[in-house]
Image 1: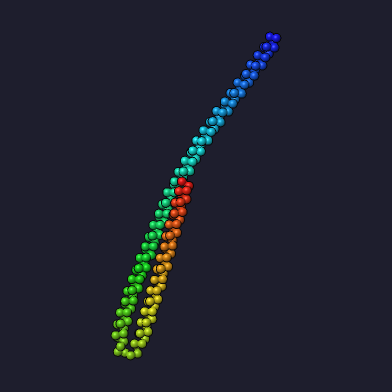
Image 2: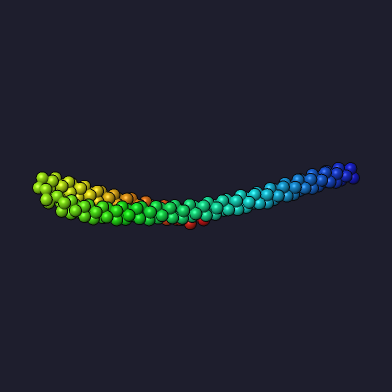
Length: 170
C-alpha cells in the first residue's frame, strides 16, 4: 500500500512538473506574442507617420506648383494683353499716318489728273488692308483672351479638385 501511495505521489509530482513546464512554455509564448505585438504597433506607427509626412510634403508641393502655374498663366495673360494693346496702338498710328499720307499725296496729285485715280485706289487698298489687319488683330485678341480665360478656369478647377482630394485623404 505504501508503494502504491509512493507511486501515486511520484506520478503526481511528475504530472505537476509537466503542468509547471506547460505553464512556463505558455507564459513564454505569451511574452513573445506581446513583444511581437509591441514591435508591430511601433513599426506601424512609424510607417503611418512617414506616410503622413509624405502626404504633407506632397500637399505643399502641389500648392506651390498650383500657385506657380496660376502666376505664370496670369503673367502670360497680362503680357499677351499688353502685346495686343500695343499692336492695336501701332495699327491706329499706321491708320492715322496712312490717312495723312493719303491727304498729302492727294494734294500733290490734284494738279495732275492722271495720277489721282491711281493714288485713290492705292489709298483705298491700303485702308482696306489696314482695316482687315485690324480685324484680324481684334479677332486674334478675342481668341487669345478666351483661350487664357479657359486655361485659367481649368487651372482653378484642377486646383479645387486637388484641394478636395487633399482634404479627403488628410
